[in-house]
Length: 590
Image (cartoon, rainbow, N blue to C red):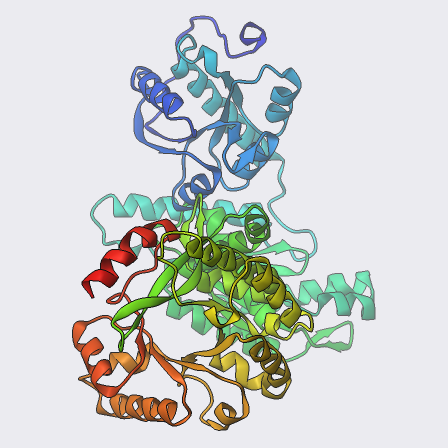
């Protein structure tokens, strides 16, 4: 197959190419090492070479930096086939994409080339092909394709006579090159300034329905005049989508862009006069500021439109792009997209944290805690995926998964060598608690595992319990009738009224860690802590202090008469097999 492809060229002199940056996307270590060896021997003028082993990391690298060449395997841990090509092309800017593959499927390779890849390299030929020649000609084809595309693209919009999106990107890119040349002669990076303002007419669809398409074109034209009049002469303005505009402000800082955006909002507070009609345009504005890490002009424009969309969705009128917030948003979307599958595949693990009995000086209560060790992101804290599970309706499935596995583990401990705790505490959301079938489901879990109901504590967060107080009372009573104890988690952070403690069947109070942190330093927090302990004693409730991190805190709690302590000082969360080895030793020493 290699002999049929245009990569094999006659030994003609190669055109010189400048220093290039290369991104390699390959998950096999052996292939990474082979590529490194080939690149080292290629005599290419390589300024930098970055290697990643998955698509997610490749996207992160491409958002941070422009690469001239992207060498990618078709089959990655998080993406395969043509989707790999399309996903990389969406973020690679002007880079030349070369595909490496083990496949001998001509159809797939033709589709890769027609989909935008410049070339493919069979992995088995890596040692034989001239990598220098492959990359050089891929760069030339890529440049020719871009030049041809630029030549065919219109520079101005027919309706508004503003620049088109691509012409604006070109204008920003030229300014960016000036900035780079300036910084090359030791000009401070703070001089590399510039910003984009993106504006959207949010009610444009309604205006089209009201006035028709012909009138809508006139509205766009009048809106463009108002945008242009509000901008400084040095700016470049464009219509970038159907009802969206963008303005590039070279040498402008964030404050300059904000002031202009506010002025623009004031201008659109006044109706447009279009064909003797007064037309009110509802707008949203997004701002993106040029940073040292901004990879290319198209990315900066994308950041501004992202901020504009955020302003529209939040109905805030104005939003400024923040990379940190966008990273968090992308992470949240990835967690949301993959959580249901992770739950179904059993990828949610359980760890158990000891709770120390301060009277008996033993760790005879454990709390079951969920963990998700994502193959690419790493360990995801439960606060992240629990919130997502609640928002998208997966919380009941998560709670049941944790409860079933925790009960099974407690049963296994009981059949073991005597390391079973007296009690096991499991968190349950109010959404799960309020399911009519939950008490029966809980009874089935206990009987199937031959557990004494008194061994189980169910933890419910105080702040989520109070709004559903009257509805929860019946369910909690049914659970108590089984013999299961009810624990209020994060006690002290919810509502000021304590009347529910007398109204609800509660057995355990878990004092929020913020009160424990005040021991020995905050007299007010310590006074509240003492009152909570006295309240627990008066109501004959067990009291657990959360967040204990020092010996001084532990001894102070013991002196105050607290029943239990939980925190890193008493024991970190660990998998069941590790606890089985550690707890007998710890209890013996205690």
